[in-house]
Length: 318
Ligand SMILES: NC(=O)c1ccc[n+]([C@@H]2O[C@H](COP(=O)([O-])OP(=O)(O)OC[C@H]3O[C@@H](n4cnc5c(N)ncnc54)[C@H](O)[C@@H]3O)[C@@H](O)[C@H]2O)c1
Image (tube, rainbow, N blue to C red):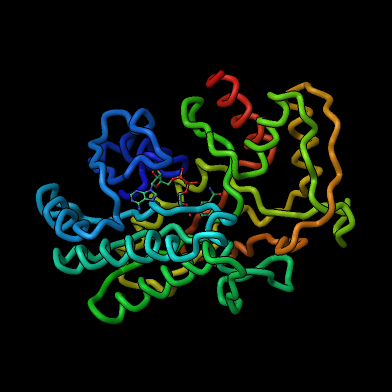
């Protein structure tokens, strides 16, 4: 597994370990941490490094790898806008090395972390996988190109791939696996509260029920389970699709999330209303019918469990 020492990857590692599976984690620890993966073997490697393919081939052979879950990527939208070349080098270059190593070693199963960022600004509330993707930043573009890469490898040498388009991932499956990055709404709000600041809401005049943006928040443990389901799917010969939305199919507005945080934290904080940010679609939620019918997967946890688990993990870390 690549990127296994990160927020989402460490949940997938733990589930696999609980199933008794051997996991090897490849991670350069740029944002991940070895503490998150327990006894799993860690190989510290930047996938985008020039010598990565050779090292990956040796590792895949030595460890008799049967399938790859590819989560490693740079994921900061703003940084991708200011350093686009580096994002392509990292996310596309790294993935090219990995696919080349898999081709050379005849490992033909991959689950790839894609993103709802591939959709850009869809003019529909619940977006389906066959929507015409027009990502609006380099980060989203690297994810769409990653999907093209798996499709090309399927045609060229028989890769079997599942591209999982994650929506807004939040929560914690275990108290020691909190999302510690300050990039997503929930940890950003927790940080603001910890420093006594009022969390900001960007845009309160959208055409939504309460005027704030609506997103599809998926519990990280539900998402991690979708990876295990995807591995089983790759073993089947009757696969109809390679790309799946992973969300709940239920939207929650930014103000609803903040209210849930107030309830769980028991802190009655003020909110700072800010103007809209460019590039924020008012509504972006998953149509989850494909993953339900093809993989028999659906999210089991809702917003309350997401916020409660995130808050407990955050409190455990303090
Ligand atoms: N968190 C979300 O809401 C979200 C939503 C959609 C998609 N994703 C995707 O899910 C994946 C995991 O995201 P996360 O939230 O766990 O992020 P994360 O930063 O916690 O995890 C990414 C891991 O990959 C490692 N990594 C990054 N670049 C690497 C490289 N070149 N070589 C080796 N290791 C490298 C990092 O050290 C880190 O451990 C990413 O591909 C991300 O784009 C995340």
